[in-house]
Amino acid sequence: MTTISLPPQQHQLDPGEPYRGRPVPRALGWALPGGGRAASAEPGVMWQGTTTQVCGMFPFAVSSGAAPPGVPIGHHMHTAEPVGLDPAEWLRQGLVSNTGMWIQGQPGIGKSTIVKRLMTGLVAFGFTAVVPGDVKGEYTRLVEHLDGRVWRIGRGLHSLNPLDAGPLRAALAQTSGDEHARLSETIRARRLSLLEALVVIVRRAEISVTERRLLGAALDLCVDGTTDGEEPIIPDVVRILVSPPLLLLDIAACDSTLAFRRDARDLVNTLELLCAGAIRGLFDRQSSITADLDTPALSLDISALDDDEDEVVAAAMLSSWAWAAAVIDGSAATGRHRNIFRIQDELWRALRVAPGLVERSDRVTRLGRHRGEISAQVTHSLDDLEALPTEADRAKARGMAQRNGVMVLGGMADKELAAINEISPLTASEAAMVRAWAAPPTWMTGSTHPGRGRYLIKSGERMGLPVALSLMPSERDLYNTDTAWQPRTGHA
Image (tube, rainbow, N blue to C red):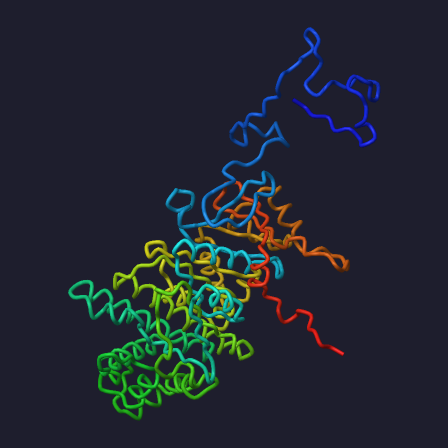
C-alpha cells in the first residue's frame, strides 16, 4: 500500500475530489465493486534476505540485527530501534570472536562519551571498570561518581613501583606445584618486560641481548634477597649491577668488577636516571597504592604528568598498564574473579617514544577474553601508527587494531577511512555516512559538530550499526570533557 502525502493546502479536499487531474480515494479506498475497499489496513511485512537477493528493492532494504543486547547506547539511525553494546554478551551469543574494542574518530565527536556510557552500564551489570593511566584525568569524576577509587600518580602524590606484583604475590603464596611455578614465571616475565621497556624509554633506543640477560639475572637476585611482604624496587637492581656477583661477570664476559662497570655503565646510568632523573620519586620506591577489585571502578590518574616530557608520560602509562594487568590477573588467581572493563586512552603516547615498545606493552598487558575482560583502545587517528619509530612497530600496532572484535567509528576524513577499510571493510554507504559526520570545511558558528554522538559499530564484514547517542541531563555534566572552556561567571 502506498501512502500519498498532499501539500498542506490540499488537505482540506473532500475525499473523491480530483487532485492534479486524478481522483483522491477515501482513507480506506472506494466502496465500489472491484474498488478495493478495505475495512482495515494491515501493516507491512518484514522479510529478510541476502544483499544479493534484495539489492533490487533499494531503498526499502535495511540491515538486519539492529537491536543486539547490551548497554543501551542509542537508537539505530535508520530503523529507530534501540541498540545495545556489550562485547562480552556478544561473545557468548557468537556475534564476535573476542571482546576487544577499537574506538576512533575526530576530536569532539564524543569518543570518551560513548566509552563512559558503556562504562556506566557495564558497572551496573557487575563489571569492574579499570582505567590505567588516565592521561587527562577525564574519567576521574565518573569513577568517583560510581563510588570507585582514584589514585593520582605524580610528584608529591602517589608512587607506583613498576616491579610490584600486586595481588599476584598473594596468589603465589596460596599455590604450589605447577601452578606456583606458572605464577612465578608470569610475575618474572612481566617485571622483566616492564624493566626493559623503561630502559628503552629513557635511552630511546633498543636494549642489547647482553643487557637483557644482565637485567634478568639482577632482577632474580633482587627477588631472592627480598623478605616476605616486600617487593623489589629499581634501586635494588642498580645496587646489584654496581656491585656485581660472579654470575653477572660471567654473563658480561668480564674478569673484574672494574671491567664490568665500564661495559655496563650505559645500562647502570639509564637505570639511575629512573631513580634520579625527571621521574625521580615516581617509580623508584614502593607503591603507595593498593588494589581492590571489589570497588566498582578503579583509576590511575596521571594527569599531573601530562605536561612532562614524552618519556615521563610513557613510563607512567606503561607502569600503570602493567600494574592494572597484575591486579586483574592476581584477583582471578586468588579466586576473587570479576569481569573487567579496561580503558586505554591516548595509548600511542606511550608507544611512540622508542622502538620495541609495542611488543613489550603487549606482553605486560595481555589478558584477553579468558580472563573475562573487555578492553577499549581509544585513538584519534590511525596516523598515530605512522608516528611509531619502526616499520616493525607499525605493523604490530596495526595487528593490535585488527585483533579487536568490535570497531566503533566516529566522523573522519577520506584518508582515515581508507586506512580503516584495510582493517574492517566498509560499504560505500557506510563510508559516505562516516565521512558526512566529519567536521565541515566551513566557518559557520553556533552549530554542533555534525558527528557529535554518532557512531558506526562494525564487527567483521557484517553490516554496521549506525547509532545516534542521546544523553540524559546528568550525563551531559558528568561526561563533559570540555570544562576548561566553560564560560566563567564574575568577569568584569
